[in-house]
Amino acid sequence: MACKRGALIVLEGVDKAGKTTQCKKLVKALELSGRPAEMMRFPDRSTTIGQLISAYLEKKSDLEDHTVHLLFSANRWELVPLMKKKLEQGTTLVVDRYAFSGVAFTSAKPGFCLDWCKSPDVGLPKPDLVMFLQLNPSEAAQRGQFGEERYENSVFQNRVQQRFEELMKDTSVNWKVIDASQSIDNVHTSIQDHSLNAINAAQETQLGTLWK
Ligand code: TMP
Image (tube, rainbow, N blue to C red):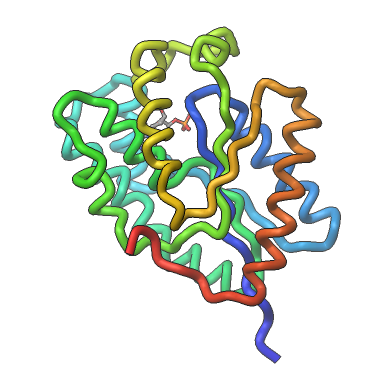
């Protein structure tokens, strides 16, 4: 009998909302309960494309805005074969940022619309669940290290938040908003509940395609 596929679960939110901490906790909890799970993150800075992006984020290099947007997207596409393989093998993928960050961050720059920003990511594997960690950007700014990388300033993060709100109006995506100002454990409990539902539902459905 073919094994049941894993779920594609994405955590999104403004910088410092706690996505990475929560992704790690979720993977650990799923594994402890006997459900194979792995964490991925975008940008994946380990690839050649990811290194270009990383240098840009660390302000060691400058890239034209359209160009860097396409590089972020290419960085997702280059990982798609691996993602599909793992999902087919029954592994649930917990992903720290995905195409939604791509669109929210670039479209927060002057002169970019949502539609243009979405287009290179049309057709990516569609997440079974996208959890948005909601945190007031001024509260996020008070959490550690804010301000070291490109984009880490409150004015820009406010615009990013507004773009995420636009994206969350799309009911073709399974969005769940999580209050990230709660304690780490309470946030984790909500995330785990939503994830278990998504994992069960994914076993009965095929992997979809994003924005198509
Ligand atoms: P992180 O590695 O700390 O999550 O930071 C990555 C930064 O890159 C963050 O500011 C969001 C931004 N970003 C984009 O601009 N486009 C994208 O497609 C992704 C995934 C992230």
